[in-house]
Length: 173
Image (tube, rainbow, N blue to C red; front, side, top):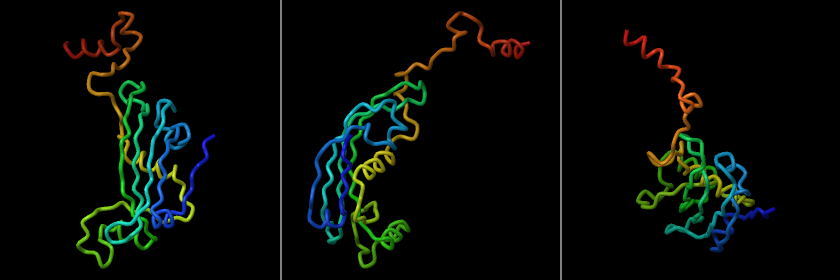
């Protein structure tokens, strides 16, 4: 069993700490629901710091290969995870400002756009990674066009007539 890392997000960001490690996809339970199999390793780096206005941020970088389930053929398909994000640590009021689409008070000329998360003294790093992955996966993953074959029905393979062929004959008469 993999030990889940927890951090005090404000302390982690304020002191510029870093985690650079990997985790098996099998240790990310919410992600298992969308994977075809739990094989594979996610490499991630979590770097604390301050943005150009002195606000605490977490920089997340993840790479890995997993197997999603193609929604066309229902078979496994390789999917490369390569994601980077800068997350602004906020209190609830700061999150409300970010959610409303407004800039933080006193910083109307801010050039960087951030996603904000609630600052937490006991932040589950793996839950954060899962959130970032799940938010960035395709809604309906599919192989490239022509790369997968939708399974033919048993009757078509045995040379039997397709069940809707009778309707085609009726349409012609």
